[in-house]
Length: 240
Image (cartoon, rainbow, N blue to C red; front, side, top):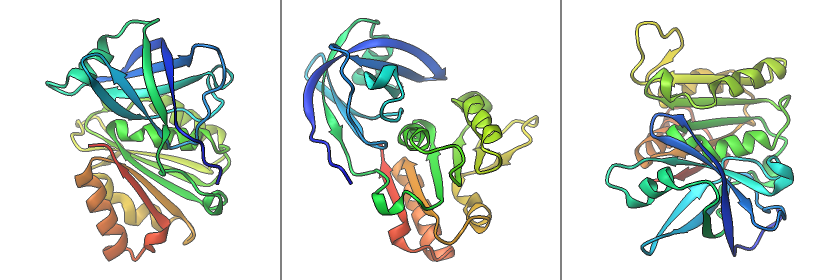
């Protein structure tokens, strides 16, 4: 696996929009138009005013935005959080110092041909989205995406379109912890659906998990103790 050294550089805000309540997508671009070299799943450190720095997973695959000169981040607005508040208000054109890419939550060479189950909650879907964008739609994979309500299902139509285009190779499986009566899909936390989804996938499947520590702990416990999944096939990263 190629390793990319982290470097300091200023990135400019190219675009920003809300993709779910309290979650802002921010597209950053290199000032010189050169590609931002990274591996799908890695993260970047942003240096914000007031001596604040924050780490965010890159939510786009290498080379997929403006020839690679742009990357996308997902920023959850944290109550009382000065960093996320500033990023939710930052204007297009603002330059932000950064350091990156960093992180080992990537698909290693030996894993690239294996089927993949991606398990994410909230903005923890960011690195999983990058990983999915980096593989063909026809690659056998499933995204188990847990949020509270239908309004929180960011990029849902993109996932559904990918599923339609994949010929059945990609499965989008959203689950809601606070589902309304009108919701006809999966309900409850992501760990409650692992047995069914993994049971329909080859034993060689690798599992990639990103979200809050509590969720990751429960998912890893379920995979190990209840389903007997080899720990070498389980990869995770927390964002709290």
